[in-house]
Image 1 (cartoon, rainbow, N blue to C red):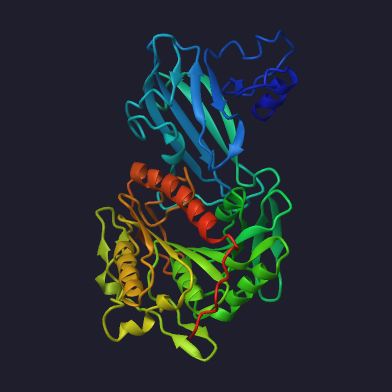
Image 2 (cartoon, helix red, strand yellow; image 1 turned 90 degrees about the horizontal axis):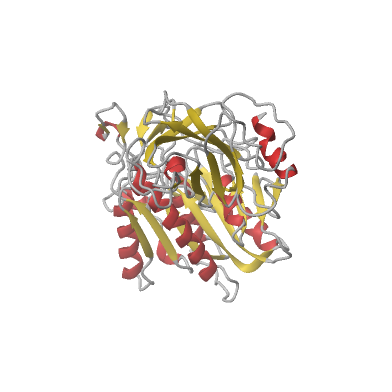
Length: 464
C-alpha cells in the first residue's frame, strides 16, 4: 500500500543514504521481491526525489526533483493535503523537463497553474482548500501533515496520466522536542522544550480572537532552542467560552510559571502574540515584570474586543462601528476601517502604555491586512515610545502579506469565518508575497528572541 512504500525501500537498502526516492502507482500496488533496481512498479516512468527526505519539519524547505521524463516533456506537478477535518487542499503547476529528462524545482520555473515562476516551495504555500473559507490549522502537533506529490503527463492537472508519485510527512514536533500539557492552577497551556538539558530562553505564545489552544507555532519554535508555552485564554476546556472580559492576573500566572520552571532560563521571558494575542502581549509587557522582549504580529496598540482588568485598573476596549465595514467583490467583509481611532477621544483610554515596558518590541505588519490597520498601529507605537524617550521599536513591514501571517510554507488564508462574529471576513494577502513574508518573519523572530531573551540582563519591574 502507499503507506508502506518507505518501509519497503528502507528494507531494500535503497534509503540508507541520501534522499529517499520512490514511485507509487495510483492504486495500491502489490510489492514483490526483486533486484535493487526494480522496486518502482513498471507503470511508473518517473521517480520523485525529496530532499532532505520523505519526512521533515513543516518549516523546512524541500527540494523536489523528478527524473525519468522524456527530454523537454511537458508535465504538471500536483500537490494535495487533507487536514484533520477531512478538507482537501490542492495546488498544481505546469513545468517542462530539461534536455536530460529531469526537472529540478529549484532551477525550473513554473509555467502557470496555482503559481508561476521559480518557486521551489510553491506546491506547499499555494495549497488551496475546496471551501474557500477554510483555514489550514494543525490541531494535533504529535502527528504530521501528509503531502502527496504527483507528476502528471501534459499540462492538464485533472486529466494527465500519473507518471510518478511521492509522499512527504511534514512534522510539527521535531525529534527530541518534548510536549508537556500544563494544567497548573487556572493555566491551560502546553509547554514545548527543546532537546537537551537546558535551561532554555522562554517564550509565551498567544493566539488571536479565535480562542482555543494552538500549538503548531510553539512546537516548531521549540526546535530552534526556545522553551515555548502555547497559552490558551478562552474557548478551551474550562476557560471562559466567550471573550467578555480579560484579567491580566491569568497571564501573570503564566509568566510566573515559566520563570519558576527548571528548564526555563530566567530572569525574564519573551512574548509572542498574533492579532488579539498581540495586544494582550503589549499589555503584559507594560504592566507585568519579568518580560524582556515582545513580538506582535498584525495587532492593535490599544486594548481590543473586551475590557482588560488588572488589580484595581480597567482598560476599556477600543470599540468599533460595524457599519463602517466594506465589502469585497466576492462578498467578503473587510473590517480594516471599523475600529475606532485610538488617538481620538474618548478612545485614547484604550491605548496601552507601552512606555512602561522594559524590553524592546518587534512589530510585524502585513500591508494587505484586511482585519487591522497594522501599519498604522505600528507607527503609533513607534511615535509613542520615542516621545517618552524610549528606544524606537523594530518594525517589519510586509508588502502583500495579509492578516494571518503564520509559520513558513503555510498556505495563505485570504478569507475565513470569524469565530466571534460568525461572518465571512477578508483576511487579505497575495499568496506569493505572503509566503515570502512568512519565511523572512520566521527568521527575524528567532534572531530577535535569541538576542533579547538571553538571561544576561535583569529586567526591572514595570511601574504602574
